[in-house]
Image (cartoon, rainbow, N blue to C red):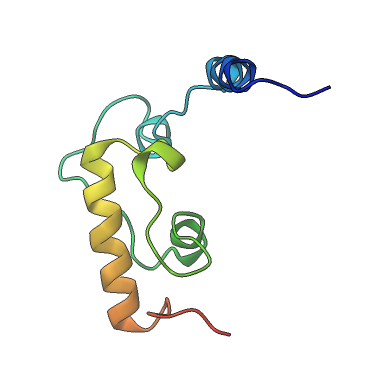
Length: 93
């Protein structure tokens, strides 16, 4: 009883449609408005750790649901946190 590749594709498409749409957590915290200037706190290590993977790479927007504006701010915050020593540059083996 083997499953054809067409059936596998069909199941994957259905699963992708059922997946919950991600929303930017930073806009939700601000009450739906984008604050100016856009800022992500580089000292909030718990938040930044949730936005990087085990290898220390910044997760893409499609995985986290972060908006483009805040994704740029997250990148800056991660770079600052690494420079200040709050986050490691490389993973610990």
